[in-house]
Picture (tube, rainbow, N blue to C red):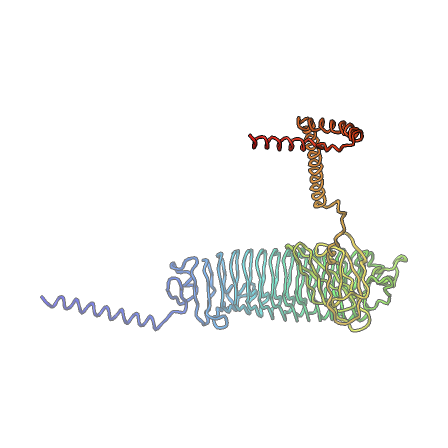
Length: 621
């Protein structure tokens, strides 16, 4: 009976030993694909994605190695390779390497290679909100293909040796940022795609086009480096309303080409050392080129069958042939450009086919390095026209009527989210522009540096009144300029002109100093409040004194009246009258009888005599 429990215990020990061996074996054969959220391992990427335990929001981590798969991502997961150089997914020429069909998918850290013709290394298919970053896509038809998708980010990828490096078709509101595209037929290609942003991409050594837009509008291309592409650096074909800002396009066959494209803006781009034209327009109208540097190309800017374009604020210099070429192109506007040392001629403009082009804005034109006129009026504008083409059409020469005597510089500042531009024309090098704004706009200041080597330097500056309203105080190294004048105003801007001895100087422009407070004016004393106060007091005292005098007089008069009507006074008066009357009789008596009579002279004497006599009688009694 004791044998049964012993067998059961032995069986349990045996099972535990088998489980322990199995676990140790599993640890020793770790699977390369791990669902980080569940802790489950898988042998292939697709197995991990297909597992029921894998849910939206999970992260699939893939170890370094080569995976011969064609991965389909149908869940909103993050697919993360250990290292983009050593975590390789090879499509084996059998289709797309990674096919993303869900929204909000992240793919990062892989090399994807060897798709079949017409397919892609990473194919984003009608999928929104994805992030494709830090991958290498090589030897595919499309390195990264975004099709019918929106709000995706393609960032920091290397696309090498593909037919199309990064290709967008029918896709909008995507961000293509910081990618390296080289050795492809087309580096970055937008096809019928709008409202996308291409920024900070490095696109070089592609066989056809660096960046190619076809039928695509309202896209922004900014701060891209596009160089050494065998064909065109940037090509816009039937693409309108795009903006190119701050791109460097150099050492391509053609720099930037617009074909059948309208209303595009090229601003702040550097287009240089291209083998043919820096900027070429063909059949394109209504475009604007502003503040670009177009230098050291064969031709600077070439317009063919193109009209109504605005070319202003550009530096067009040191091109091997022409600064600007116009073939069958009319009604284009050119002003504020610097045309400097273009080898053959600054402008080629056949008068019989290119007419009605404007070379000034009615006030200011362009700077021409070969202009031979002078500035007798001291305004920064030449005193005679610059003849653009010496072949007259119907007796009229094409000319710049207001050639600038110095190069054009443009500086900007932002006030309350609005951009304001300060235009400077100078024969010095101008740099270091700064604008400072004080409280209540009373201490606003523009400062800049000028640096010249010989003779007299000058600046002609157009100042928006929003920055500093006129009049102006201009100093050069805190001293007055040699000459100063406000040469023009149009209600919103004022142009000032000043000169100095050419050297390195600090220029400041400020409102005039507030006037010194006026000196005190001697105000007549009768305008002062204290005068009237003292006057009032004096008048009051005089009135009181007058009243007191009148009062004393009245009291004295009343006293006299009272005294006049007193019995003693009356008696005294009657006594005095009697004494006077009797005095005459006493004198007659004394004279007649020869005796001397001593009368009482006053009533008081009589009274004292009577009082004395009365006192004696009392004593005797």
